[in-house]
Each structure stands twice: as C-alpha cells, then as structure tokens.
Image (cartoon, rainbow over all chains, first blue to last red):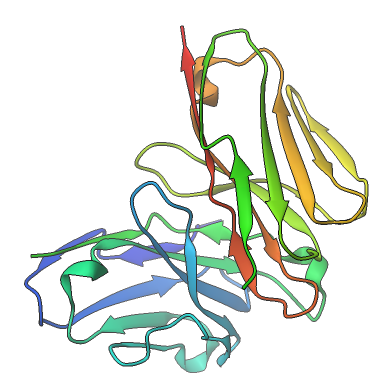
Length: 117
Length: 111
C-alpha cells in the first residue's frame, strides 16, 4: 500500500513569491492534516480536513495561507506571499476516522522543505 | 491554550542504558500517540494509548498513559544506536478535540 505522497520535496523561493504544496493521502483515509515543523520543534497543526470539510483551521494564518481539498482526496496548501519566517518543513498526514476518536493514528508523508530567501 | 510539554528536551545515553521521556498535557487528552522522527525524516507512528492507566509494550519499549489522561511516558530498555531520534507524544484535547504535538525529546545513543 502506498504511503502519503507529497510534492515537491524541496522548494526554494524568494520572499513575496507564491508557493504551493500538494498531498495525496493514503487511499481510503478520510482525514487529512497539514502541519508546519520548524527546526528542532514538534509539528504544529495548520489545518485538519474530514473529507472535504476543514474542521479545524484555527492555526492557519489566513491572511497568506490557504488550503483546499476538493473531492475529499488530494489537498493543496498555498502561501501567498511567502515571508522569510515561513521557511520550514510542511508535513501532510492522513488518518482513518469514522466518527470515533480512538482511531486517530496518523501516517505522515516525507514533507516539503521550504526555504524562503 | 493547551500545551503538551516533554522532558527532558535532550538526552544522551550510552548504548545499553535505559531511557525515559515524559509527556505532560495541560488538559485531558482523549487518547495519546507516540511518534519517532529520525534526523531528516518524518514522524513515524509507534503506538496509541486510549484507556486511563493503560500500559503497552513493544519489544524494548514500554508506554504508559496516566490515570488522569494528562500524562504519558515512554521507556526504552537497553538502548541501541537505532533508537536515535526525536520522540513526540501527541493527542487530541478531550474537550476541544484540537490535536497537538508535544515538544519532543531528542535522544542520542553513544556506542
């Protein structure tokens, strides 16, 4: 079974430029998460989807970040415009939850390492 | 807001020594997961604990979930160089269901 796929793996851009990350979750997983991980820190949840619905986006900086999960499968996270402080690894994870909290095991993709110059 | 702290932040051990990391949440968790992240890698799921006071073992690893479901621990017996990495606890707040990762414990094992 294929794992969570993310692309690109690395991205270098200049500040004020836009950037987008793509995630394909494990087949059948209805819940998708986007995290940001700064060096030496734990992942910070940006947004969580259950199917097409964003059920928790309280940590998403909505002035410059946006996300979508059309059709409840693939997802895209966008930053426009990027700032120097956005340099981090952006992780996507998926899990299979059907109304019960007890099956919240998350499987992570390899991440996209973003460098903003 | 909700915080999940882990101690210690760093730990260096000699190969063969035991290691323990502690996870403390400011709020009650519905369940708790433990993840391991190797340098340059992504978090990999280790185990999930759901019940108050639950204890689970995986070979040399022992996981505990506190009675109040606000703390947890991971104990590694006789560490090996392959245990190197950062160990994170994580879980959803039982009231808000906000999912949060702990601050992590970085383990180095000296051969």
